[in-house]
Image 1 (tube, rainbow, N blue to C red):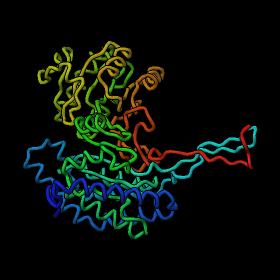
Image 2 (spheres, rainbow, N blue to C red):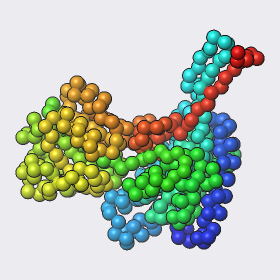
Image 3 (cartoon, one colour):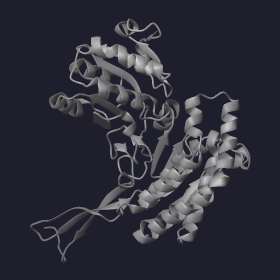
Image 4 (tube, rainbow, N blue to C red):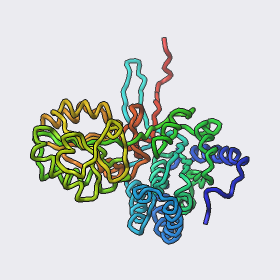
Length: 429
């Protein structure tokens, strides 16, 4: 079983990375012209290979999980890392959903004709080579690789040491699918070491062979990528996500929605980290909301109003409002109204995902319009911050910036465009 810390001497890492870059660039030229049926055939072959490799993937994953448990990693971290039969089947299903999507390459995005007779088209094109640096969750490798393939891009994927064995087996299956469809194996390449110098090489662009980087991991990883990258970055920042229970919310709706947003999976980026309760309904809503969270095993850290409703609540401070717990912990605050909720989210949020619970359509419209986050929801759990739930079949990440892509980055967002201009011997006067 491969080990992340073996197989490549430190002095050879840069040479290996350069070879990956050169091979990816060559593969990208082939993929850019690959017809949709061939790409879809490769995706179906990948899904079948994942299913056929289930035993090997789970065996590798068991070793990775055991290492993480031995290192006393948080339960939420171990959950992100852990695969089972259902999750492996989910990886295969996500690949098939990508195959079923319309081909994003070659779409005519706009067309027009000028008075001089020139005909213009703006047409979608692949980005080229996408580098993905991720931590912990092995399904990210499959999601990123297959979405890149659908969009005609080659992918270079670097996972963390905690999931190295699992990702090696997944990558092996994906490459078998490429071969079966007659596409270059170098279309999907996993960095064969967890040595940190490999990340540095990717940030430098691999001699111009990486066109865009996608960091998918903790705050420190994303900060390093943004600070050091010499190529464009689709930033996937932390998910400091809010649920605001408005004065015209239904308690019967609010309780299960808040529990789902926080606790369905605490370690995902769409998990809610802060609950805001309107003071107009706090006398009736605050105690049952807090009790439901506590009864479900969630630690509650609250402001003075929240502390008063249950002795098990711990005091919150300013650091709590700005913390992505990724654990069964939530901060709770009573706010004077919608304006205060909007101000709190603007100050402490990460522009990722925020939700309002209300029966007031006007308040919902204000929230959806004024919260400057990649995803805003009305009467729905923040855990829908997932490309699969958007119908994208998966995602390469949730982009929280404002340039090029925002929200779930699926195959369509992994395309650029070019202009095709047709004349009839037209010259410019």
